[in-house]
Amino acid sequence: MRYQLELFFTALGFFTRIPVPGWVPWSPERLNHAARYFPLVGWVVGAAGALVLWAAALVLPESVAVVLSIAATIRLTGAFHEDGWADSCDGLGGGWDKLQVLTIMKDSRIGSYGATGLVLMLLAKALALAELANTDPALPIVALLVAHPLSRLASTSLIHFLDYVREDESAKAKPLAKRLEGRELAIALLGGLLPLMLLPALPALGALVLAALVTWRAARTFVRRIGGYTGDCLGAAQQLSELACYLGILAAWNFI
Image (tube, rainbow, N blue to C red; front, side, top):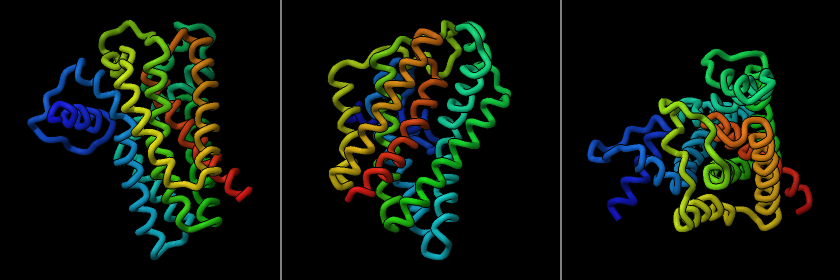
């Protein structure tokens, strides 16, 4: 049990700015095995965003509360996934071959594709959550609790099914470049799918199906363009599937 707790804290420390206990050891191998708990990190991030949204909505308009909630999750994760999304937009948008795409992704500077993609992504998530609030004030809170774990499961699925394509040992995601074992994948599935029970059946299905479709399409694009995934691709998959969850819930709710 202690080892499992250490793995969870390893994942939490890698993907968020939350301090972890000093007794938690770190190694590349532990980070790889910690992939099973990436969706559980989404529970923490989603809960923080939901708490900020609930508290802010008590005194502020829903739209402002939504923006503050998104800002809180970004602060908590250090814009880790948003950075991956922007880098992927730059690389896939500006690169012609695999080497060029990977080189652009590695560049810390943001380009026009990345800036445009980041603005549109944040705007789309804010508008989707605001529309959910207009439908039911409690709905965006539940959506946050569902989307953050499920979207991290989407990223974890890429680790399991695709090949890691960077050869440089200094890459942040290099320790993750090992496919999950069956038991590890089962734990990740449980962590990512269990929050769907917070939703009625149809919105839960809408979130799951749309997130799965977006992840599948992103995976195909990554394989076609660079032969697999990088750390930036994991961030991009998380962002895309998070937005897909909100849109899936919003679309399905209209049929209830």
